[in-house]
Image 1 (cartoon, rainbow, N blue to C red):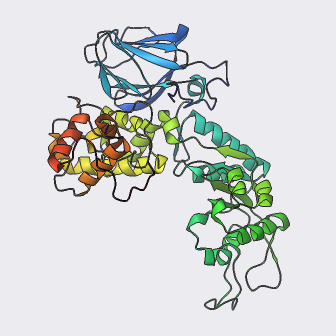
Image 2 (cartoon, rainbow, N blue to C red; image 1 turned 90 degrees about the vertical axis):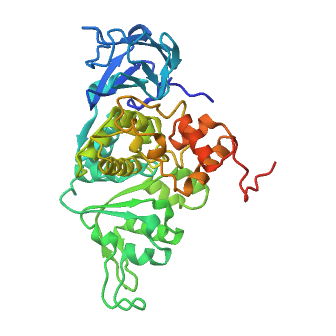
Length: 466
C-alpha cells in the first residue's frame, strides 16, 4: 500500500485525525548545520529559492533564485524543479529540469535538506532542542512532558517503543520530575537477566538461602529505595517472578529469598516494552493482574524514521563527541534520512561514529555518505517509500574516490550480502541497491566483480512452500 508523503513526524497527530493541522515542510539542514525551520504550504504550494522576502527563502549559495516548487495534493506532496542551476534531488535521485515527482522522505536543494511534515505547528512551537543531553524533536518533547506529569503525580509509567528509541531517557525524565529525584534511578534490562537468577537479582537473598550466598545481598528493588525502578522489557520476566513483583507493588513489602520477614520498600516504577502489553497478555507471557497495575499511564515513542527532524541534530551531537571533530557533509545527512534505522537512535549514533572514524582514516575534512557502511541503517529494516542511495555529488568529499576503492575487494561477505539483497528484492537491482545503501552503478560493478548473476539463486535452506 502506498503511504502518504507527509509523515506525522513532528505533530503526534496522524493524518485525518487533526483537521486543524497545517501541512508544510521542515528545513532540517542548511548552511552546514542542523536546523528546524517550519514553513507552511500556504494555499497548498511553496516555492523554494533565494528570492528575498519569500516564505521559502533559503540562504544557500547553491540554491537558485527560483529553485523548486512544492505542491500539496491530498495526503501527498510533489516537487517540480524550476530549472535550477544545481538541480533538485528527490529521495536521493536528481529530478530533471521542469520535471515533477512525489517526495516521500527528503528533498535536497543546493546544500539544504527539506522534509515533508503533516503538521508544522509543533515544530514552530517547540523546534528541536537538546534537553538533559538528549536531542528532542517536537514529538519527543511532548512525550517527555507526559512523562514528567506522571512523575509529578507520583504515578507509575509505562513506556512503549522500538529498541533504541530512547525509553531509558523517558524514564529519566519521569524520575527527575518527581519527588524522588534526589534518590537513585535503578535501570534493569529484564531481557538480560538469566531466568535462574531473576528472583535473587530483583528481590535479594539472605545469607545461606542457597549455595554461594555467604552474606545478605540486596536486590534491585532494595537499591531503588526512595527512588525509581526502571524495568525495561518487563514482559521478559517469568510469570512466577511477575507474581512476586505484583505483590511487592501492592504491599510495598519485599521478601528476599531465604528471609522469614518482609522488608518495607518505597520506590516509583517505570516499565517499558517494545511490544504491546495487551498482546503479551493475550499470548500468556504477561499476567493480566500485573498488566492492570502497570499499563496506565503510558506513553509511546515514535521510531526514529518517523522523527526525521531529529536526525541532523543527532548526527551533529555524535560527531561533536568524536576526537577528529569532523562536521557532517550534506550527503551524510541526506543518506541517513533515507534509511529506516531499525535500531533507531542507538544504531544511528554507532554508525555515524564508525563513519567519522572512516573519514578520519581517509584524511577527509568532512564525514560524507560514502563513509557510511553500506548496510548501516537498513540491514534488518524493510524498505521505506522511496529511499534511494544518493548519486555521486561533486561536492561530496568522498565522491572523488572511485567506488571500487571505497568498497574492499577482499570482503568475503559482499557476495553473500549482494545475493541476499537480490533474493529479498526478487532480482530487482534498484531495490537491492537501496537495501544495501548503494547506487545502482556501484551494485552492478560489485555483481560483476564477485560473479553474481542478475538474480540471486534461492537459498539452500529456503523451505518456503511454493
